[in-house]
Image (tube, rainbow, N blue to C red; front, side, top):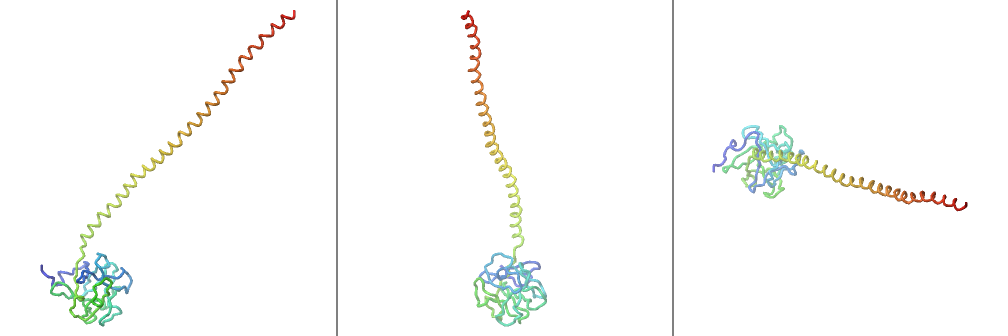
Length: 241
């Protein structure tokens, strides 16, 4: 496998890169803070935008390094130039504290050197490899904690994976609502009719039967008494003569 020895084979305009240490951890803006002065540290690569950087060319091999998430630049804290000066992010400007030279090594990795601080390298405090280790500048000692790998972020793959998921989600939700809403309404209406209709019909039927039976029984008892009384009067008149 051929090694990358020139900046043209690695750095392209409008591309974003991760800046990786030997153990795979990357340089990021701490706590995805968007404010000026936010710390720059080492952390596990999560594919997050605050771990991705664009190299804006300012001259031959000189760049302003811009964070994708915040839009702010990799910068020397308070414009310091001594060993141990920490890095932070700051809004873009014309200051040379934001200018970095990319120097390639024989194995295709890079050193990022401050254009302002006499070529001092981007370095990890205490040569730490742990999450949260702060980033600083230090004199070039050719140490492993001063050598970085630039990996281009695969834009096309990331977008292709997100687009289908975004399109499918709204369709499924819309279909579920349309399909289930009528069923729920119809079921509620059916239960209401089934529960109320029988009660309304049965109540009047029972009352009508009781009222009809009472008058019929009274008519049968009174009719025979009225006919027998007049038949006895003529017999009483014949006996007196």
